[in-house]
Length: 316
Image (cartoon, rainbow, N blue to C red; front, side, top):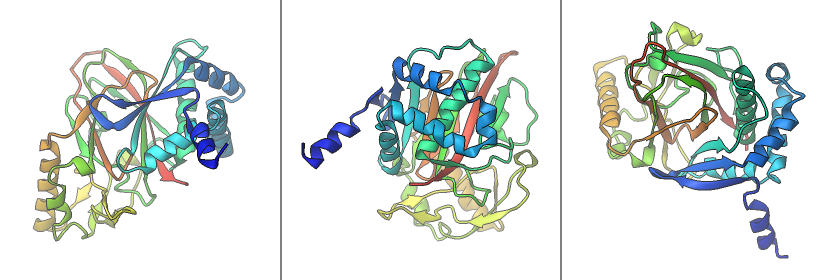
């Protein structure tokens, strides 16, 4: 067997399938088989989520368990997808159900699965808002929070994560843990290269000028940092972005109008698309070449949607 043929054989998906997302072929849909889920569930029974929180090295053991079930083809595919700017995102779902009851036990399984996935592609940063390597938060029908994250009845505009922290934020993982009486609230995505007015803002005199970024009290991050929106280029010379309209603190009229026009342009761009996440499904994006947001929810007195978030940097 030639080296090339061995590479083809060993990278064919085992225990999962792949297909492009219907609305945008950049997004790869990864479906773990019921057999893979059953095997992973069985391998995880000795480790509760608390063990993963207390012992960081176990998170890599969890990732290796999942990868081994796929004969180490899953990790290769996910990393190749995230490192390719033309894709840079995947929606991961699974067939069947873990051998557990509904409720918190199902949530524990989904946290373990997202931990395995995040540690196959990188290392999650500490999430100051929740105090762990992941965050859990719930959107309800009524909320008085100090950011748009939990406000159900408005659209959360397209943005990148990690604008107000010192840690590099190469990827964002968003997983739905539960929902009730939920209508609307789809995730929104726009690839930087599909933004019609990218060149207008990337070539602007302020594109590489430092902007001050801060965060509201709920984020538990007291420092302010400075960086440009187009803070670097990738290996092919294409721009990486760090932008969010809520946390930018312009210091003069020129910066303020540049940020205003950029936010307006992104929200009016027609190339964004929506993604519905069933419970247990996760959406993972390369944070610097994808902008993400959330559509508004339809009001309901018992509306509830719980999301898990992991944000981190690549290690390969």
